[in-house]
Length: 338
Ligand code: EPU
Image: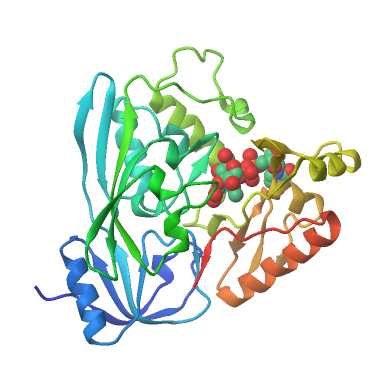
């Protein structure tokens, strides 16, 4: 099979931040059998390999030498069903939100709260995507990945993926694994989760008979009210993780700022809202050249034109410094920097 490898291609359409860097070589992978061949090609031609899915959690700071693989493999199928539970196998290149809409159309629950998260299914386990009280790990059944070092396929159980808040084994070993498929566990009778504060304003009066499709619609509406559409304003979702601090630290801050937003995390730790911290530091809506914090959600950095990855990082660093000075808290960027 001949691989359709293109040369010197702009990656602007392949990252939601809309950063204009070039890939020396680029291959859009539509069929999983192309993967081993592409890796072999790269090895033979001495080219490094970078894999992206929807490009929604990445900041490109320079042209990418070597071969960029964009995974667009397709396929969603129910492979097992027992009582009300269905195991659904999904190819890595499926757009995550399309999977969500497919599931709610089937009457299957479990991922409706994860509506409108951009990116692909293969990227979902990497940072353990999450929203409104639900995380990918809650529905994960297994993850299949290609070991780039050995060329073998390996199946990880949920436990082996080492998921935690916006984190997994795959995030720490990007050179080793290419996620090719995931299996998720959905349920025709899954409980719905609509307790999250941000959803309340969009709930209808009658909430006892909500379908998964309706919950998905409510989540979509909530996100559209607060988060920019990357087709209109480039962005990578939340730019920083919500910081996890000790109970004492949170107590101390709470005395100074009674409206501090906290979420339970572990026995002696709480999660703070990074968006609140940035907002409270007076940085919401700040714009410098083509980069700024989104006026409706300070945690999202937006590209107002043709920003470079380096400018994004410089701006992010400035935010980190100001937040550190004001609250003595370190913000950690969420997207992967390439
Ligand atoms: N807040 C402010 N000012 C702001 C932004 C937020 O005061 O400018 C306050 C809000 O009022 C709220 C709290 O901070 O009390 C949290 O805000 P929000 O509910 O919007 O959620 P978040 O913590 O900023 C996280 C995820 C989002 C996810 C939402 C909803 C992270 C880093 N981000 O954001 O995920 O959609 O919760 O569950 O955990 C993403 O990861 O890219 C992402 C968008």
